[in-house]
Amino acid sequence: MVTGFIRYCFICIVATTIAACHSTQKSQTAGKDGWVSLFNGRDLNDWIVKIYHHEVGDNFGNTFRVEDGMIKVRYDKYGAFNDQFGHLYYKKPFSHYHLVVEYKFADEWKKDAPSYTILNSGIMFHSQDPHSMPKEQNWPISIEFQLLAGLGDGKPRTTGNMCSPGTNIVYNGVLDTRHCINSTSKTYGKDEWVRAELIVLGDSSITHIVNGDTVMRYSKPQIGGEVVTGHDPKMKPDGKILSSGFIALQSEGQPIDFRKVEIKDLSSESKERK
Image (cartoon, rainbow, N blue to C red; front, side, top):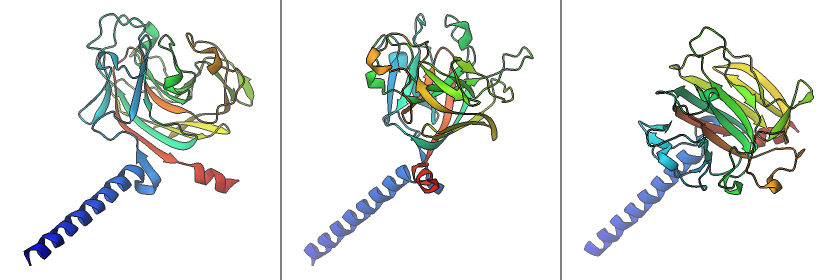
């Protein structure tokens, strides 16, 4: 009788554990309407750090950290900045997706960083694998959804711009080799939470959305252009179309907080359209 009761309890515990595991797995892989959070709110175990002058995986100075349920970018453990531009990559690449990132600039800009980095950060996508970057590569070959805030001087400063380290895009129907192209967004203050959305359909269409407003569209991202240095030449076959790649959050001298990083896979929807 006792043995039977123990066996029954054991079966209940196993069944409960399995159910809990399935429930946890589901919550990590399929949220409401197909949305998945890439950031679990606790740690950076699903992310990869690559900082200029450092090997992949070295989170120098605890640049990227999790505090208060947010991903924070900070430089309080740095000495000289020394152009130590960094990127925090999600662990796997994507091709067709809708990405949502909510961000707000924080604290004081690191004063020995380049002046263009004031209230400046970014979301890199269609990026090369961080493991393919040598220690002395400054930027990933990628496309950037640039994040900016107003400087308080009354002048407009759009966010959701496109920048292209080691790449080019087709904009308004022609190949555009400018490094950065401004969006049509409003200017947002440094203390405002901003919702940045990116709709990527492989290489056929890319849309930037800021606080619900579509601010830029372009297509055919491809390897080419300048800016990137220290890279393996094999990783930069100019003219190669980019239809997928890694997503990364940037650090380049300005503290910033990210409270949401969510993605919806659009691969099946793209196939249905075809």
